[in-house]
View 1 (tube, rainbow, N blue to C red):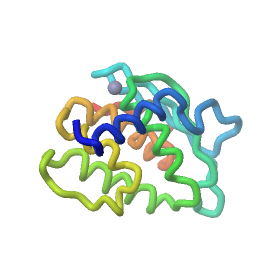
View 2: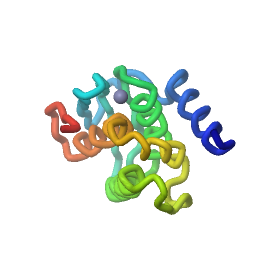
View 3: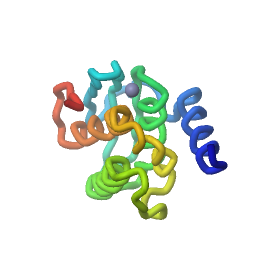
View 4: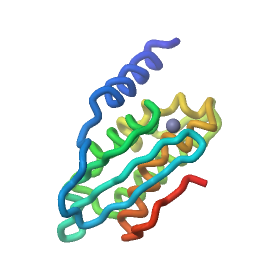
Length: 150
Ligand code: ZN
């Protein structure tokens, strides 16, 4: 394992062990639930939005290390962003994570999300890594129903 890989692994395990912004939010403006049947990951994402800007994001639920750390890292990236900026970040993340493991990507645009670049070698885990984001988008759209990664 390269040093880079070891570092990414460490970040993922840290967020899995100590998830940021974890817990139920009282009176959120938006919320949605996401479920990944392949792995059993299940999370609820809560949002508070003011004047089109994401003020607070929280999540709760349970899942594998990839899904949980991805949800945790996501919540640390969204504060102060507009819906469009959040969507763009997800598009960049999804583009990277579904690309060929040898393909290059823009590390600057992805920021902390590059820790999941190793997931490209395990396509089945892509759903784990993107579950929280799909749930976020559903919450942003005000869709109350459970979203599925299917
Ligand atoms: Zn999973």
